[in-house]
Amino acid sequence: TFDVLVVGGGPAGASSAIYAARKGIKTGMVVETFGGQVLETLGIENVIGTPYVEGPQLMRQVEEHVKQYDVDIMKGQRAKAIRKNDLIEVELENGAQLTAKTAILSTGARWRAINVPGEKEFKNKGIAYCPHCDGPLFKDKEVVVIGGGNSGIEAAIDLAGLAKHIYVLEFLPELKADQVLQEKLYSLTNVTVITNAATKEITGSSHVEALTYTDRLTNEEHTLQVEGVFILIGLMPNTEWLTGSVALSDRGEILVDKHGATNVEGIFAAGDCTDSAYKQIIISMGSGATAALGAFDYLIRNT
Ligand code: FAD
Image 1 (tube, rainbow, N blue to C red):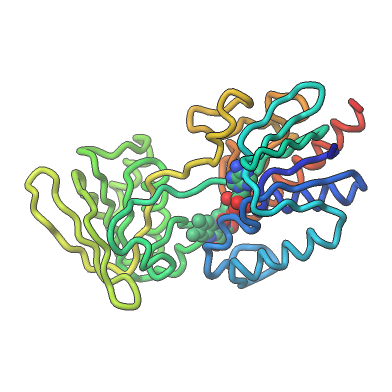
Image 2 (spheres, rainbow, N blue to C red):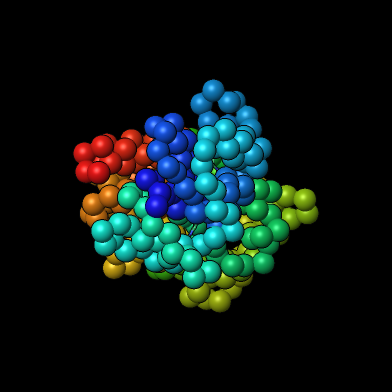
């Protein structure tokens, strides 16, 4: 039986494991792929104190750091259910069952893909999902933002301060973002909003050069010459396996309090799978530390 069992091995899970192990308590980690979303990131420039690092390199360092402590890392394992009886029981897809006094859920999230030709090919070569991360790469360039919800319109407003021109493509007849964001967007002079636009393909040679969309009203095709495409059509938490066992928001994010505690005693959560306001590496690492300290506090009070 573990004192703390961490599920997930991205920045949040790794940080939780280090903070827990440093308390000298029995710590385990169940990890499908150590590294999480950061493995998909080429250059990272906002880990404070490290001006530039590539995602795989950062997560190798993080894994080395975890391994300096006595943490039982179970790699290549997916958790499929969690229950609280006397102890917390975590069931794995391979059929094994683990028990723990506390658990920290840190299964992260994934950006919804648009699934058009060119999306995979040009990922990190002009296609981006995170304006806070990659916005500065597009200074003085022409950029498309796909998605007219809050995250898309926030990104367009953010990028408009850096990029030369922004095209916002929305599939539906109107933007879905909050009115105040739409007003701000329409006050900017370097933004064009295109509704009823179905993205067809993203093209280029070594880097994105153009995006073609179909006007859903006229069926006409149009091509925009752009160097960047931000796809902001939803960040989906990896929490499908938790439905019915911990409280989730209507977007499927795990609801946590300021100690990282969920609604189930002894179960904590951290990182992009929670309802944290912003999803970033340092924020996930911070919330992982919070959840581990929350779990330790719970242990000294309850066991
Ligand atoms: P994740 O990194 O998503 O890790 C989740 C972990 O859980 C993984 O180990 C996964 O294998 C595991 N897992 C999932 N389900 C299960 C399961 N059922 N059982 C067991 N394990 C499971 N942020 C920045 O701060 N700067 C950047 O420059 C930046 N660039 C980005 C670029 C891209 C392309 C993307 C996609 C994201 C970027 N981000 C960036 C965001 C950042 O990567 C995330 O905020 C951060 O990785 C979240 O950490 P996490 O630990 O919460 O989740």
